[in-house]
Amino acid sequence: MPKVPHLVQYQGSKRGLAPEIIRYFPNTINRLIEPFSGTCAVSILTALQQRANSFWLNDINQPLSNLMEMCVQNPLELSKQYEDIWQRQFQDAQNHIHYYYEIRDAFNDGSKDPAKMLFLLARVVKGAIRYNAQGIMNQSCDKRRYGTRPNIIKNNALAISSLLDGKTIFTSLDYKDVLQKAQPGDFIYMDPPYQGTSQKNLAKDSRYIQGIDFDEFIAELEKLNNRGIDFIVSYDGQTGDKVIGKCLPDTLGLTHLYLNAGVSTQATLNGQKAITYESLYLSKNIHL
Image 1 (cartoon, rainbow, N blue to C red):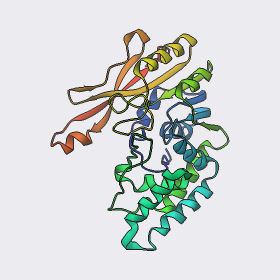
Image 2: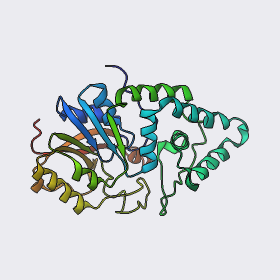
Image 3: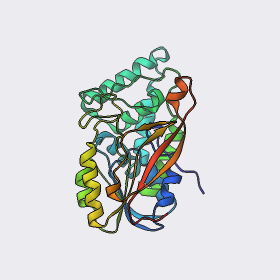
């Protein structure tokens, strides 16, 4: 299989687990919908394997959605703008860290420019964007590196565009609005903010710009069941013996699987070694 392109590192991306996740997708999908699309790793792999005719990619984080839309629809312009921003950090090599914060301030002050967000993602610590209580990006700069080289960004952006351009729409809606507009025959993959990482409105630990309400989410899944729309959900799991979050209820009739996500980084930092398993829930018409 050709190499799977990815635009930039992004904590929480399903890039590593995507091959395992799409094993449970239908071989042919009319329209794949991702209400929590992030950097679109699952849809990119699905497109590479030619398993979906069209895509609806949505993320409530509008700057992130705009970034991926520009990547797909205008990859050369995105790459050029990124390269201009990336190169300017070397004009004063002693102050390249201060330059990062200048770009971050410009982004937060209202520009929400896709190329600026791409640069910030490329330079933040561990690819982990964080937001404060006002929804302002506040993650620190990785002082050890300058971010992804422009030629790599360009090549990946062009590859992603070749897979998704002309058959993808991008929105930044509440996930409930997306699910309401789904039609029988659509297939939905959901990777919502995990329990324990966010509140309903803004995340205290700030991994997500907006969280979801657990009970509301269950109600939305029940509606999909009643309408006969198939879906798969990635949601929490366990690390070692520690179960993270509440399982989705048996009343939904879902098949619950665990995917090996590798050694827990947090456990390693605490001097322990534990494997993280992420939960995958398959709606009742999906057969193993």
